[in-house]
Structures are given as C-alpha cells and as structure tokens.
Amino acid sequence: MAPRFTIARIDAYERMMPFAHPFRFGAVAVEAAPQAFVRVAIDLPGIGRIEGASAEMMMPKWFDKDPAKSPGRTIDDLRASLAAAARVFIERGEADTAFGHHAAALERQTAWAEGEGIARLAGNFGVALIDKAVLDALLTGLGIGLAEALRTNVPGLDARLTPDLGLAEIEDFLAALVPSHEVALRHTVGLADAIEGPGSLAEEIANARLGFFKIKIGGDVAGDLKRLRAIAALFDARVPGYAASLDANEQYDPPRLALLAATLEDDPALSRFFNRLIHIEQPYDRRATFETSLDAAALRVPVIIDEADDSYDAFPRAVALGYRGVSSKSCKGLYKAVLNAARVARLNRRHNGGYLLTGEDLTCQPGLGVQQDTALVAALGLTHVERNGHHYVAGFGPAPDHEAQAFARALPEFYRVEAGHVRLDTSTATLPAARLLAGPGFASGAAPDWAALTPLTTTFASQEIFA
Image (cartoon, rainbow, N blue to C red; front, side, top):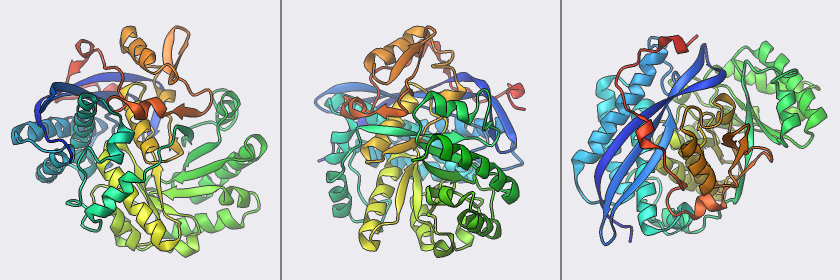
C-alpha cells in the first residue's frame, strides 16, 4: 500500500541564469531566465520529517504564447503559479499518498488559474514542480529510487484522473516497466543555429557522437525545406545512421503541414531524411489542435502533441483526431507522463504499435532539473531525450562552486570538470541513468545551496534580458 503522509513546509526560491548566447523562443530572443527551486518537508509516519527538492527553468513565452503578454509577464505567471500551488498543498493539511496530494492540488490549482486568466500549462507548473520535490522527500525517507518506486507504485497512482485507464491496468503497466540505464541526447537544432562554421551544428557533430537530432521549423514551408536540405546533406555526410524529429512549435496549419510532409517524401534531397524521421511535434497552435483532425495516413509520420498537452484528457482527445503520441516533460507533470506512458502501451497492444511517448525538455539545467527529468524518461524506458539546456548556460551558471561540486561528487559519471567548472558530461552523447534510478530519492543526490538562492519574487523588472 502506498505510504500516506502530510506536507509540513514548502519553500520556493529562484536564481537568475544568464545565457552564454541568446535563445530564441518564437519572436523573442532570451538572454537570461530564472530557475525556480523548491524545498519541501514531509512528515512520514514511522520515519519522521524528511526534505526533498526540485528545480525547473521559468522560460518566457513557452507555457503561454499569448502575444498580449510580455515575456516578463509570462514569467510572473509561473512565479504566481508556484506560489499558489505551495498554498494549495499546505492548506489542505491532510495525510495522503503522493499522487493523492497531486490530484487534490491539481483540481484547486486549475480552478485558480482559470480565475486568474493564466494559461493551463502555466497554472500547472507550480504543481508539477512541487510534485517532484514531494516525491524526492518520500523516496529519500524510504531509502529507494524512482525505478523501484514506480514498479511497486509507491506514489499511489490510481485512475481518478484517467477514467479511460483502470487501476489494475495502471499497476500492471508499472510492474512491467523496464528502465533504460542510459539515455541518448537528442540535440536540438534551433532556428537561429548555424549549420556550418564556428559554433555550428557541424561543430557539435564533430565534438560529440551525436546520433539523434530535433530540428526546429518555423512555418515558412519554402524556407524550412531549404534549411532541411542543408541539414540532411550534413547528416548524410557526417552521421549516416542518424534519427531526427521536427518541432513546429505551433507554427503550422493543415495545408502547410501536408505540403511539408509531401515534399519531404518526394524530394530526392530529402527522401532519406524523411525515412529517418521519428515524429513531428506540435504542428498547430495549441488552441486549434483539437479543432482539426489529422490525416495521419497521408502524413505518414507520427505527429505528437506537446504544448497542447495541458490536461489529463488532452492525449486521448488528440488520439481521436489522428495524433500518434505525446511528450514527457517534467515541467508538465511527472504523473501525467507516467499515465500517458500507460496509455501508449495500451494503444500499441491494441493497434500493433505505432504510438509513442517522447522525451522532450530543451531547457533543464545541470543539477536537479536535468537529473530528475533524465531519471523520469529512463524509468519509462525511453532511450533518447531532447537535451540542450547545457548549451545555453555555462555549467551551473552563477551557482556557488561548492554547490556544483556537491552534485559532481554525488554523480561523478554525470558531470565533468572543464576549465575549473563543473559541466554536464555530454562527450559520449549519452547520459547514464542507473544511479539516478537507484536513489535514494528522486534523482537528487545533492541539494542546492539554499542560502545562495533568492526567495521567490512576485515582480519582474529586468526587461533588458529580452531582445
């Protein structure tokens, strides 16, 4: 039976993370963004008070792309989401399972976000971040890791949020999980990234044994195809066994998506690239995703949702429209990722394959963020994941050196020291997951220097970090 416990305290902090070079989110170029940190304390019967922690980047203009909201306003919405979620978890005051705490908090948080005019993904952010810290505390107190916890359903996952799944089906899925002990990096090629020359995709390929790629496309079919031809030629010459995905980031519509897919298949310069495609991610605006069916047979490439995955019923609704998959992202909720994985397993049993859960998270940073998200996808048996956050922040950024060193000591196979700074070790283009999965705790191993963090703020004045 899943342990029941109370949540005694939740503290929220942040740290501004300056970028080594700007990152483009749509029309916005981001030069820095805050990382949120959560510390919780739970009272676990028979064991006592245990702490857990988590971290996520608060990136502007992804959780909410409303053009009427400034980048700073979208970050403030994430801060407000975290502050509101902390109140929701604490005010309940009841003993419950980890998943029980999640389900109760999510219901109240969803109502709060709707009342505040905050997009559902942004509203869910605070709950997702606190869930990770709560699970870290629970697994630390029990002395186990994520793999064992999921296999034996220690969080207490049930069917209350997924009526299309039965409890027995969920528990059978969890018991049969076979974790991946290493996860390959899927390198993201941004819209502004050079293909050749200094700091280019060609240089990245030369410096690491990359085999998986995620390519951003911007909605200009002719321009996207021209760029894809150059990328495909580079892959054919340098990485003949590659696999790739395309991320449209809500920039396409049905006619342009059909034209893109048909050209990819028919153009001799792109036909091999087309055959190497794993999936196309979130082509349509999240608000229009559920208004139009996909002609999956005509596209001949699985299409998945990402930004449209803002509720527990989003994936089944998308499947009914022809979508073939959904992304796993810790910032969208670890329990939703697990239950969507169970749905994918059932769909593949019923339809002889063809459905997929993918690992996507561009921005998670060394330390708790990248460790916990990597552990999640590894526990679900995924073999590759989008990983590029280490390209935008130098190592642990402004974190004190002793904080970075603590994580490196806890996971020496995960990090390397370069020019005196601790960085994620991407030299083999894979991340080892065995120690992350074994625990104790939810892939933590070390904690931030809490005294070096700033208590969560509710205003955002540094407009100059956006261009």
